[in-house]
Image (cartoon, rainbow, N blue to C red; front, side, top):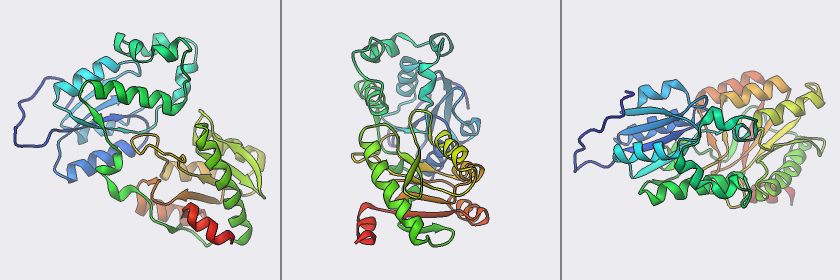
Length: 299
């Protein structure tokens, strides 16, 4: 449903879960998980980001622009939302392109919320921007929760997720890339590193994981390399949680990567059954590890 008209709510029922939806399949998984818990689901889809399929999974749905902070808060409050989830990627690079003001038309609440960033008094790092947004909603009575509260099965377990066991050489690349990715995450630069023979091919910045993998593939010319994607050292599970899925496998295959290492309990794995099948057919090895596992392996 796309109507934004308020509905009468049963006082004995829990308030609906609100989803602020960006790019990717994660908002769909969260919506299904919340519905499976018996919760009503309402969502705001960011234009040019969210999957239109999300609307069919929601009791209420509306499209918003990147700058529609005030409208987003009003709609959530109108629908009775007290808990919400940030799900899906926002292409931050849009905010650095000429003319973004005209395309995304920030409202007055958006301008007030991000005035320090717009005036250059604060940085535009991912965590800074997202925390500022979360606090603005909290002031209006809408508290953001981790997406995994409503879809806990999405977090990947430790072990071989798909494909063959890694060779000693590949494990060395994983260990090398892991340490580097952890440092980059601590600096809020990116969460993905591509390596080969313990040499760095590409490091993710605001362009995103897919572009990082693509750049590495251009250097390697499909000769095989390792991609490591980890959480930040102090990862806020409410936003920007590392996520992999079928689209990630397609990017790995197109670039010629043959290993993906992700972090146990801190990475969301979408479409798990199909992901495992597809990875096996593409001959891509996927492992889930933790800092402790890597330390034991290196000892």
